Amino acid sequence: MSIHASMFKDHATLYREYAEKKQKILAMGGPQAVEAQHKAGKMTARERIEYFFDPGTFTELGMWVKHRQTAFGMADRDLPAEGVVVGFGRVEGRLVAVAAEDYTVMAGTFGEYHGKKFADMIDFAKLKGIPFVGMNDSGGARLQEGMDTLEAYAWLFRSQILASGIVPQIALLMGPCLGGQAYHPIMQDFIIQCRHTGFMGIAGPAFVKTQTGEEISLEKLCGVEAHAVKSGSTHVVAEDDKDCLDKAKELLRFLPSNNREKPPRIPCDDDPERLIPDLDTLVPAEPYKAYDMHQVINRIVDHGYFFEIMKDFARNVIVGFARFNGRSCGIVASQPNWLAGGIDCDAADKVARFVRFCDLFNIPLINLHDTPAYWIGSREEWKGILRHGAKMLYAYIDATTPKITVILRKSFAGAYLGMCCKDTGADIVFAWPIARITIVGAETAASVIFAKEIKSAANPEEMAYQRIKEYRDLYENPYQAAARGYVDDVIMPSETRKYINRALDVLENKQEVRPWRKYSNINL
Image 1 (cartoon, rainbow, N blue to C red):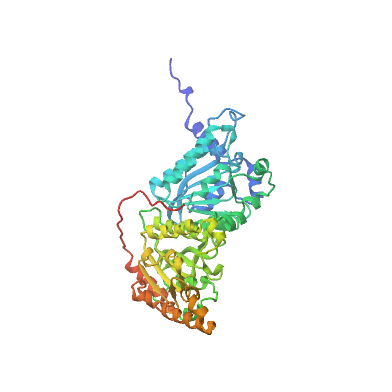
Image 2: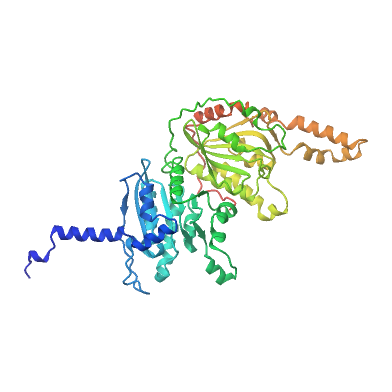
Protein backbone atom coordinates (compact mmCIF):
# COMPACT_ATOMS: atom_id res chain seq x y z
CA MET A 1 0.00 0.00 0.00
CA SER A 2 1.41 3.35 -0.95
CA ILE A 3 1.76 6.16 1.54
CA HIS A 4 0.40 9.55 0.56
CA ALA A 5 1.15 12.85 2.21
CA SER A 6 -2.59 13.51 2.50
CA MET A 7 -2.82 10.71 5.07
CA PHE A 8 -0.94 12.87 7.58
CA LYS A 9 -2.02 16.03 9.31
CA ASP A 10 0.24 19.02 8.95
CA HIS A 11 1.83 20.90 11.86
CA ALA A 12 -0.86 23.55 11.96
CA THR A 13 -3.66 21.00 12.21
CA LEU A 14 -1.88 18.92 14.85
CA TYR A 15 -1.10 21.94 16.97
CA ARG A 16 -4.62 23.33 16.61
CA GLU A 17 -6.06 20.03 17.78
CA TYR A 18 -3.59 19.98 20.66
CA ALA A 19 -4.60 23.49 21.71
CA GLU A 20 -8.32 22.61 21.51
CA LYS A 21 -7.90 19.46 23.59
CA LYS A 22 -5.81 21.27 26.18
CA GLN A 23 -8.21 24.19 26.36
CA LYS A 24 -11.08 21.77 26.99
CA ILE A 25 -9.18 20.30 29.93
CA LEU A 26 -8.25 23.72 31.29
CA ALA A 27 -11.93 24.74 31.13
CA MET A 28 -12.56 22.10 33.82
CA GLY A 29 -16.28 21.40 34.25
CA GLY A 30 -17.33 24.32 32.07
CA PRO A 31 -18.58 27.86 32.72
CA GLN A 32 -21.71 26.89 34.65
CA ALA A 33 -19.81 24.59 37.01
CA VAL A 34 -17.13 27.24 37.57
CA GLU A 35 -19.82 29.84 38.31
CA ALA A 36 -21.43 27.48 40.84
CA GLN A 37 -18.04 27.02 42.52
CA HIS A 38 -17.63 30.77 42.85
CA LYS A 39 -21.18 31.19 44.19
CA ALA A 40 -20.33 28.63 46.87
CA GLY A 41 -17.51 30.94 48.00
CA LYS A 42 -14.75 28.75 46.59
CA MET A 43 -11.98 29.15 44.05
CA THR A 44 -11.56 26.50 41.38
CA ALA A 45 -8.73 23.99 41.62
CA ARG A 46 -6.73 25.82 38.98
CA GLU A 47 -7.33 29.21 40.60
CA ARG A 48 -6.08 27.81 43.90
CA ILE A 49 -2.93 26.52 42.25
CA GLU A 50 -2.34 29.81 40.48
CA TYR A 51 -2.66 31.72 43.76
CA PHE A 52 -0.53 29.27 45.74
CA PHE A 53 2.53 28.93 43.52
CA ASP A 54 5.04 31.58 42.51
CA PRO A 55 3.89 33.01 39.16
CA GLY A 56 4.87 30.91 36.17
CA THR A 57 6.51 28.10 38.15
CA PHE A 58 3.78 25.43 38.23
CA THR A 59 4.26 22.33 36.07
CA GLU A 60 1.22 20.11 35.68
CA LEU A 61 1.58 16.35 35.40
CA GLY A 62 -1.05 13.85 34.26
CA MET A 63 -3.29 16.40 32.56
CA TRP A 64 -4.31 13.86 29.91
CA VAL A 65 -5.16 10.97 32.22
CA LYS A 66 -8.63 9.46 31.65
CA HIS A 67 -10.75 6.95 33.50
CA ARG A 68 -11.39 3.58 31.88
CA GLN A 69 -14.90 2.85 33.19
CA THR A 70 -17.87 2.05 30.94
CA ALA A 71 -20.65 1.04 33.36
CA PHE A 72 -23.45 3.31 34.63
CA GLY A 73 -23.08 5.99 31.97
CA MET A 74 -19.34 6.39 32.33
CA ALA A 75 -18.47 5.26 28.79
CA ASP A 76 -19.24 8.66 27.28
CA ARG A 77 -18.36 10.71 30.37
CA ASP A 78 -15.39 12.99 29.74
CA LEU A 79 -13.80 14.15 33.00
CA PRO A 80 -11.09 16.77 32.40
CA ALA A 81 -7.85 15.84 34.24
CA GLU A 82 -9.88 13.14 36.06
CA GLY A 83 -11.16 15.76 38.48
CA VAL A 84 -7.80 16.39 40.14
CA VAL A 85 -4.95 18.70 39.09
CA VAL A 86 -1.49 17.52 40.15
CA GLY A 87 2.02 18.80 39.62
CA PHE A 88 4.83 20.77 41.22
CA GLY A 89 6.09 24.31 41.40
CA ARG A 90 7.78 26.82 43.66
CA VAL A 91 6.26 28.40 46.75
CA GLU A 92 8.35 31.36 47.87
CA GLY A 93 11.21 29.82 45.90
CA ARG A 94 10.96 26.28 47.32
CA LEU A 95 9.70 23.27 45.38
CA VAL A 96 6.35 21.87 46.52
CA ALA A 97 4.12 19.13 45.10
CA VAL A 98 0.34 19.50 44.95
CA ALA A 99 -2.88 17.64 44.22
CA ALA A 100 -5.95 19.88 43.91
CA GLU A 101 -9.34 18.25 43.59
CA ASP A 102 -11.65 19.87 41.02
CA TYR A 103 -15.22 20.08 42.28
CA THR A 104 -16.41 21.42 38.92
CA VAL A 105 -15.72 17.99 37.36
CA MET A 106 -18.28 15.46 38.56
CA ALA A 107 -18.12 17.09 42.02
CA GLY A 108 -14.44 16.11 42.28
CA THR A 109 -15.46 12.52 42.97
CA PHE A 110 -12.73 10.04 43.78
CA GLY A 111 -12.41 7.29 41.18
CA GLU A 112 -9.67 4.87 40.15
CA TYR A 113 -7.49 7.23 38.13
CA HIS A 114 -8.33 10.25 40.28
CA GLY A 115 -6.90 8.26 43.18
CA LYS A 116 -3.95 7.04 41.13
CA LYS A 117 -2.96 10.59 40.21
CA PHE A 118 -3.25 11.69 43.85
CA ALA A 119 -1.21 8.74 45.17
CA ASP A 120 1.42 9.02 42.44
CA MET A 121 1.95 12.69 43.31
CA ILE A 122 2.63 11.84 46.94
CA ASP A 123 5.12 9.18 45.78
CA PHE A 124 6.68 11.85 43.54
CA ALA A 125 7.05 14.24 46.48
CA LYS A 126 8.58 11.52 48.65
CA LEU A 127 11.13 10.48 46.02
CA LYS A 128 12.07 14.08 45.17
CA GLY A 129 12.22 15.18 48.82
CA ILE A 130 9.71 18.03 48.60
CA PRO A 131 6.63 18.88 50.71
CA PHE A 132 3.19 17.75 49.56
CA VAL A 133 0.03 19.85 49.79
CA GLY A 134 -3.39 18.35 49.11
CA MET A 135 -6.29 20.67 48.30
CA ASN A 136 -9.38 18.65 49.21
CA ASP A 137 -12.74 19.46 47.61
CA SER A 138 -14.67 16.35 46.64
CA GLY A 139 -18.17 14.90 46.72
CA GLY A 140 -16.68 11.59 47.83
CA ALA A 141 -16.31 8.18 46.25
CA ARG A 142 -17.20 7.73 42.59
CA LEU A 143 -19.61 4.86 43.16
CA GLN A 144 -19.98 4.15 39.44
CA GLU A 145 -16.49 2.62 39.48
CA GLY A 146 -17.18 0.12 42.26
CA MET A 147 -14.18 -1.89 43.44
CA ASP A 148 -11.74 0.19 41.39
CA THR A 149 -12.61 3.24 43.47
CA LEU A 150 -12.22 1.27 46.69
CA GLU A 151 -8.78 0.00 45.74
CA ALA A 152 -7.68 3.50 44.76
CA TYR A 153 -8.21 4.56 48.36
CA ALA A 154 -5.71 1.90 49.40
CA TRP A 155 -3.16 3.31 46.92
CA LEU A 156 -3.62 6.78 48.38
CA PHE A 157 -3.41 5.70 52.02
CA ARG A 158 -0.34 3.55 51.36
CA SER A 159 1.46 6.35 49.54
CA GLN A 160 0.89 8.96 52.20
CA ILE A 161 1.72 6.65 55.10
CA LEU A 162 4.97 5.53 53.45
CA ALA A 163 5.81 9.21 52.83
CA SER A 164 5.03 10.13 56.44
CA GLY A 165 8.13 11.33 58.25
CA ILE A 166 10.01 11.71 54.96
CA VAL A 167 8.35 14.86 53.60
CA PRO A 168 5.89 17.23 55.29
CA GLN A 169 2.27 16.71 54.23
CA ILE A 170 -0.36 19.43 54.57
CA ALA A 171 -4.06 18.87 53.86
CA LEU A 172 -6.31 21.81 53.02
CA LEU A 173 -10.04 21.27 53.61
CA MET A 174 -11.49 23.71 51.10
CA GLY A 175 -14.70 21.81 50.34
CA PRO A 176 -16.33 18.55 51.41
CA CYS A 177 -14.18 15.54 52.20
CA LEU A 178 -16.52 12.74 53.22
CA GLY A 179 -16.56 8.96 53.53
CA GLY A 180 -13.44 6.84 53.29
CA GLN A 181 -11.73 9.76 51.64
CA ALA A 182 -11.72 11.62 54.96
CA TYR A 183 -9.03 9.24 56.16
CA HIS A 184 -6.71 10.86 53.63
CA PRO A 185 -6.30 14.30 55.29
CA ILE A 186 -6.52 12.94 58.82
CA MET A 187 -3.32 10.92 58.29
CA GLN A 188 -1.33 13.88 56.98
CA ASP A 189 0.78 16.08 59.24
CA PHE A 190 -1.45 19.17 59.36
CA ILE A 191 -5.02 20.01 58.40
CA ILE A 192 -6.08 23.58 57.59
CA GLN A 193 -9.88 23.84 57.39
CA CYS A 194 -11.88 26.62 55.73
CA ARG A 195 -14.43 27.89 58.22
CA HIS A 196 -17.48 28.04 55.92
CA THR A 197 -16.73 25.56 53.13
CA GLY A 198 -14.46 22.84 54.57
CA PHE A 199 -16.07 19.64 55.89
CA MET A 200 -14.54 16.32 56.87
CA GLY A 201 -16.48 13.31 58.05
CA ILE A 202 -16.58 9.55 57.86
CA ALA A 203 -20.17 9.93 56.60
CA GLY A 204 -22.41 12.80 55.56
CA PRO A 205 -25.72 13.72 57.24
CA ALA A 206 -27.90 11.71 54.81
CA PHE A 207 -25.95 8.51 55.40
CA VAL A 208 -25.89 9.13 59.15
CA LYS A 209 -29.68 9.49 59.19
CA THR A 210 -30.19 6.36 57.09
CA GLN A 211 -27.91 4.22 59.22
CA THR A 212 -28.48 5.63 62.72
CA GLY A 213 -31.62 7.75 62.61
CA GLU A 214 -29.72 10.82 63.83
CA GLU A 215 -30.66 14.08 62.14
CA ILE A 216 -27.79 16.57 62.04
CA SER A 217 -26.53 19.31 59.74
CA LEU A 218 -23.31 19.04 57.74
CA GLU A 219 -21.86 22.00 59.64
CA LYS A 220 -22.56 20.55 63.06
CA LEU A 221 -21.50 17.04 62.13
CA CYS A 222 -18.17 17.77 60.51
CA GLY A 223 -17.48 21.49 60.30
CA VAL A 224 -14.96 23.67 62.12
CA GLU A 225 -16.60 23.37 65.54
CA ALA A 226 -16.56 19.58 65.23
CA HIS A 227 -12.91 19.25 64.32
CA ALA A 228 -11.03 22.36 65.49
CA VAL A 229 -12.66 22.39 68.93
CA LYS A 230 -14.11 18.96 69.75
CA SER A 231 -12.21 16.20 67.94
CA GLY A 232 -8.82 17.90 67.60
CA SER A 233 -8.51 16.76 64.00
CA THR A 234 -8.09 20.24 62.51
CA HIS A 235 -4.87 22.10 63.30
CA VAL A 236 -5.56 25.55 61.82
CA VAL A 237 -8.79 27.31 60.83
CA ALA A 238 -8.89 29.60 57.79
CA GLU A 239 -11.58 32.09 56.84
CA ASP A 240 -11.68 31.33 53.11
CA ASP A 241 -9.66 29.82 50.27
CA LYS A 242 -7.09 32.61 50.06
CA ASP A 243 -6.58 32.66 53.82
CA CYS A 244 -6.19 28.88 53.75
CA LEU A 245 -3.53 29.04 51.05
CA ASP A 246 -1.75 31.90 52.84
CA LYS A 247 -1.69 29.90 56.08
CA ALA A 248 -0.27 26.89 54.23
CA LYS A 249 2.56 29.09 52.95
CA GLU A 250 3.08 30.47 56.46
CA LEU A 251 3.34 26.94 57.86
CA LEU A 252 5.73 25.79 55.13
CA ARG A 253 8.17 28.56 56.09
CA PHE A 254 8.88 26.75 59.35
CA LEU A 255 9.40 23.31 57.80
CA PRO A 256 12.30 21.66 55.98
CA SER A 257 11.58 20.14 52.60
CA ASN A 258 12.33 16.65 53.88
CA ASN A 259 13.68 14.72 56.86
CA ARG A 260 17.30 14.95 55.67
CA GLU A 261 17.35 18.72 55.98
CA LYS A 262 17.32 21.12 58.90
CA PRO A 263 14.42 23.57 58.99
CA PRO A 264 15.04 26.86 57.20
CA ARG A 265 16.85 29.57 59.13
CA ILE A 266 16.25 33.17 58.15
CA PRO A 267 18.22 36.36 58.89
CA CYS A 268 17.17 37.92 62.18
CA ASP A 269 17.55 41.45 63.48
CA ASP A 270 15.99 40.68 66.89
CA ASP A 271 18.93 40.52 69.33
CA PRO A 272 19.31 36.90 70.51
CA GLU A 273 20.71 38.20 73.83
CA ARG A 274 17.79 40.59 74.32
CA LEU A 275 16.71 40.94 77.95
CA ILE A 276 13.00 41.16 78.80
CA PRO A 277 12.69 43.05 82.11
CA ASP A 278 8.89 42.82 82.39
CA LEU A 279 9.13 39.01 82.43
CA ASP A 280 10.54 39.25 85.95
CA THR A 281 7.11 40.25 87.27
CA LEU A 282 4.74 38.99 84.56
CA VAL A 283 4.14 35.55 86.09
CA PRO A 284 2.60 35.69 89.58
CA ALA A 285 4.76 34.09 92.26
CA GLU A 286 1.62 32.66 93.85
CA PRO A 287 1.04 29.25 92.27
CA TYR A 288 -2.76 29.55 92.32
CA LYS A 289 -2.90 32.74 90.22
CA ALA A 290 -3.57 32.29 86.51
CA TYR A 291 -2.02 34.16 83.59
CA ASP A 292 -1.85 33.75 79.81
CA MET A 293 1.25 31.85 78.67
CA HIS A 294 0.97 33.54 75.28
CA GLN A 295 2.31 36.68 76.96
CA VAL A 296 5.50 34.82 77.81
CA ILE A 297 5.83 33.17 74.40
CA ASN A 298 5.32 36.41 72.50
CA ARG A 299 8.06 38.12 74.51
CA ILE A 300 10.77 35.51 74.09
CA VAL A 301 10.41 34.59 70.38
CA ASP A 302 11.73 36.59 67.44
CA HIS A 303 9.61 39.72 66.95
CA GLY A 304 6.76 38.21 68.99
CA TYR A 305 5.69 36.01 66.07
CA PHE A 306 4.08 32.69 67.03
CA PHE A 307 2.21 30.36 64.64
CA GLU A 308 -0.11 28.40 66.91
CA ILE A 309 -1.38 24.91 66.06
CA MET A 310 -4.69 23.50 67.39
CA LYS A 311 -5.35 26.65 69.42
CA ASP A 312 -9.02 25.80 70.11
CA PHE A 313 -8.50 22.16 71.15
CA ALA A 314 -7.11 21.08 74.54
CA ARG A 315 -6.41 24.69 75.43
CA ASN A 316 -4.62 23.70 78.63
CA VAL A 317 -1.50 23.24 76.50
CA ILE A 318 -0.14 25.44 73.71
CA VAL A 319 1.80 24.14 70.71
CA GLY A 320 3.09 25.89 67.63
CA PHE A 321 6.06 27.26 65.74
CA ALA A 322 8.25 30.31 66.32
CA ARG A 323 11.81 31.41 65.67
CA PHE A 324 14.77 32.07 67.92
CA ASN A 325 17.54 34.04 66.22
CA GLY A 326 16.04 33.02 62.87
CA ARG A 327 15.85 29.31 63.75
CA SER A 328 12.56 27.48 63.34
CA CYS A 329 11.52 25.86 66.64
CA GLY A 330 8.52 24.05 68.03
CA ILE A 331 7.04 25.32 71.30
CA VAL A 332 5.15 23.22 73.84
CA ALA A 333 3.83 25.24 76.77
CA SER A 334 1.45 24.81 79.68
CA GLN A 335 -1.50 27.24 79.73
CA PRO A 336 -2.27 28.11 83.39
CA ASN A 337 -5.45 30.04 82.56
CA TRP A 338 -7.19 26.94 81.16
CA LEU A 339 -7.74 23.97 83.51
CA ALA A 340 -4.77 25.34 85.50
CA GLY A 341 -2.45 23.96 82.81
CA GLY A 342 -3.11 20.40 83.98
CA ILE A 343 -2.62 17.63 81.43
CA ASP A 344 -5.69 15.62 80.41
CA CYS A 345 -6.11 12.97 77.70
CA ASP A 346 -6.65 15.47 74.88
CA ALA A 347 -3.71 17.63 75.93
CA ALA A 348 -1.42 14.60 76.04
CA ASP A 349 -2.44 13.58 72.51
CA LYS A 350 -1.94 17.13 71.25
CA VAL A 351 1.56 17.39 72.71
CA ALA A 352 2.75 13.90 71.75
CA ARG A 353 1.88 14.19 68.08
CA PHE A 354 3.40 17.66 67.80
CA VAL A 355 6.62 16.52 69.49
CA ARG A 356 6.90 13.53 67.18
CA PHE A 357 6.41 15.73 64.11
CA CYS A 358 9.13 18.14 65.22
CA ASP A 359 11.49 15.25 65.86
CA LEU A 360 10.83 13.71 62.44
CA PHE A 361 11.80 16.97 60.75
CA ASN A 362 14.72 18.04 62.95
CA ILE A 363 12.89 20.98 64.52
CA PRO A 364 14.23 21.90 68.01
CA LEU A 365 11.69 21.88 70.83
CA ILE A 366 11.29 24.56 73.51
CA ASN A 367 9.23 23.34 76.47
CA LEU A 368 7.73 25.78 78.98
CA HIS A 369 6.47 24.24 82.26
CA ASP A 370 3.77 25.59 84.50
CA THR A 371 1.58 22.62 85.25
CA PRO A 372 0.34 21.06 88.49
CA ALA A 373 -0.23 17.48 87.36
CA TYR A 374 -1.92 15.03 85.07
CA TRP A 375 -5.67 15.26 85.65
CA ILE A 376 -7.03 12.69 88.08
CA GLY A 377 -10.53 11.39 88.78
CA SER A 378 -12.96 8.95 87.19
CA ARG A 379 -13.63 10.98 84.03
CA GLU A 380 -10.01 11.07 82.90
CA GLU A 381 -9.21 7.65 84.36
CA TRP A 382 -11.96 6.03 82.29
CA LYS A 383 -10.90 7.93 79.19
CA GLY A 384 -7.43 6.44 79.62
CA ILE A 385 -5.24 9.16 81.11
CA LEU A 386 -2.54 6.58 81.83
CA ARG A 387 -2.46 5.42 78.22
CA HIS A 388 -2.75 8.91 76.74
CA GLY A 389 -0.38 10.48 79.24
CA ALA A 390 2.27 7.88 78.42
CA LYS A 391 2.31 9.16 74.82
CA MET A 392 4.09 12.30 76.01
CA LEU A 393 6.79 10.26 77.72
CA TYR A 394 7.27 8.15 74.61
CA ALA A 395 7.36 11.19 72.35
CA TYR A 396 9.94 13.13 74.34
CA ILE A 397 12.18 10.19 75.21
CA ASP A 398 12.13 8.85 71.64
CA ALA A 399 12.89 12.28 70.16
CA THR A 400 16.51 13.05 69.30
CA THR A 401 16.00 16.62 68.09
CA PRO A 402 17.38 19.34 70.43
CA LYS A 403 15.12 19.80 73.46
CA ILE A 404 15.31 22.76 75.84
CA THR A 405 13.08 23.05 78.90
CA VAL A 406 12.31 26.14 80.95
CA ILE A 407 10.40 25.63 84.22
CA LEU A 408 8.59 28.89 84.93
CA ARG A 409 6.56 28.06 88.00
CA LYS A 410 4.75 24.80 88.86
CA SER A 411 6.17 21.47 87.70
CA PHE A 412 4.69 18.78 89.86
CA ALA A 413 4.32 15.00 89.85
CA GLY A 414 3.92 13.14 86.57
CA ALA A 415 3.50 16.41 84.68
CA TYR A 416 7.12 17.29 85.50
CA LEU A 417 8.14 14.10 83.74
CA GLY A 418 5.61 14.32 80.91
CA MET A 419 6.56 17.88 79.92
CA CYS A 420 10.20 16.91 79.25
CA CYS A 421 12.45 17.03 82.27
CA LYS A 422 16.16 16.20 82.30
CA ASP A 423 15.72 12.44 82.27
CA THR A 424 12.73 12.29 79.94
CA GLY A 425 14.71 13.89 77.16
CA ALA A 426 15.69 17.51 77.80
CA ASP A 427 19.24 18.40 76.75
CA ILE A 428 19.31 21.54 78.88
CA VAL A 429 16.92 22.60 81.66
CA PHE A 430 16.54 26.10 83.05
CA ALA A 431 14.30 27.20 85.92
CA TRP A 432 13.10 30.56 87.15
CA PRO A 433 13.59 31.47 90.85
CA ILE A 434 9.81 31.25 91.37
CA ALA A 435 9.77 27.64 90.07
CA ARG A 436 8.21 24.99 92.29
CA ILE A 437 9.56 21.58 91.32
CA THR A 438 8.47 18.68 93.48
CA ILE A 439 6.51 15.45 93.55
CA VAL A 440 3.33 17.02 95.01
CA GLY A 441 2.30 20.35 96.49
CA ALA A 442 3.00 21.01 100.16
CA GLU A 443 -0.66 20.82 101.19
CA THR A 444 -1.05 17.37 99.63
CA ALA A 445 2.23 16.12 101.08
CA ALA A 446 1.38 17.34 104.57
CA SER A 447 -2.06 15.72 104.46
CA VAL A 448 -0.39 12.37 103.82
CA ILE A 449 2.92 12.48 105.72
CA PHE A 450 1.72 14.34 108.80
CA ALA A 451 -1.94 13.30 108.91
CA LYS A 452 -1.77 11.62 112.34
CA GLU A 453 0.45 14.31 113.84
CA ILE A 454 -1.88 17.08 112.68
CA LYS A 455 -5.00 15.26 113.87
CA SER A 456 -3.60 14.62 117.36
CA ALA A 457 -2.05 18.09 117.85
CA ALA A 458 -3.44 20.47 120.44
CA ASN A 459 -3.91 23.02 117.64
CA PRO A 460 -4.35 21.01 114.38
CA GLU A 461 -4.65 24.15 112.26
CA GLU A 462 -1.36 25.58 113.56
CA MET A 463 0.40 22.22 113.20
CA ALA A 464 -0.84 21.86 109.62
CA TYR A 465 0.42 25.37 108.82
CA GLN A 466 3.86 24.60 110.25
CA ARG A 467 4.23 21.30 108.41
CA ILE A 468 3.01 22.72 105.11
CA LYS A 469 5.46 25.62 105.42
CA GLU A 470 8.27 23.25 106.32
CA TYR A 471 7.63 21.08 103.28
CA ARG A 472 7.19 24.09 100.99
CA ASP A 473 10.39 25.77 102.14
CA LEU A 474 12.36 22.56 101.72
CA TYR A 475 11.03 21.28 98.42
CA GLU A 476 8.86 23.81 96.56
CA ASN A 477 11.73 25.63 94.88
CA PRO A 478 14.16 25.06 91.99
CA TYR A 479 17.21 24.58 94.16
CA GLN A 480 16.90 20.96 95.22
CA ALA A 481 16.53 19.98 91.54
CA ALA A 482 19.51 22.18 90.68
CA ALA A 483 21.54 20.62 93.50
CA ARG A 484 20.92 17.19 92.01
CA GLY A 485 21.79 18.36 88.49
CA TYR A 486 18.23 17.99 87.18
CA VAL A 487 18.13 21.73 86.54
CA ASP A 488 21.21 23.08 84.76
CA ASP A 489 20.80 26.67 85.93
CA VAL A 490 18.39 28.93 87.75
CA ILE A 491 17.97 32.06 85.64
CA MET A 492 16.13 35.34 85.91
CA PRO A 493 12.95 35.36 83.79
CA SER A 494 14.29 38.39 81.91
CA GLU A 495 17.21 36.25 80.69
CA THR A 496 15.05 33.48 79.19
CA ARG A 497 15.44 34.42 75.52
CA LYS A 498 19.18 34.80 75.91
CA TYR A 499 19.66 31.38 77.48
CA ILE A 500 17.38 29.62 74.99
CA ASN A 501 19.39 31.05 72.11
CA ARG A 502 22.68 30.04 73.71
CA ALA A 503 21.35 26.52 74.22
CA LEU A 504 20.24 26.34 70.60
CA ASP A 505 23.73 27.42 69.52
CA VAL A 506 25.44 24.62 71.42
CA LEU A 507 22.86 22.05 70.26
CA GLU A 508 23.14 23.06 66.60
CA ASN A 509 25.04 19.92 65.62
CA LYS A 510 23.63 17.56 68.24
CA GLN A 511 23.97 13.87 67.35
CA GLU A 512 22.42 11.02 69.27
CA VAL A 513 22.90 7.36 68.38
CA ARG A 514 20.38 4.80 69.61
CA PRO A 515 20.37 1.00 69.43
CA TRP A 516 18.59 -0.28 66.31
CA ARG A 517 14.88 -1.03 66.50
CA LYS A 518 11.95 -0.60 64.16
CA TYR A 519 10.11 1.83 66.43
CA SER A 520 8.82 2.07 69.98
CA ASN A 521 5.54 0.41 70.91
CA ILE A 522 3.88 3.68 71.86
CA ASN A 523 0.63 3.52 73.85
CA LEU A 524 -1.74 4.36 71.02
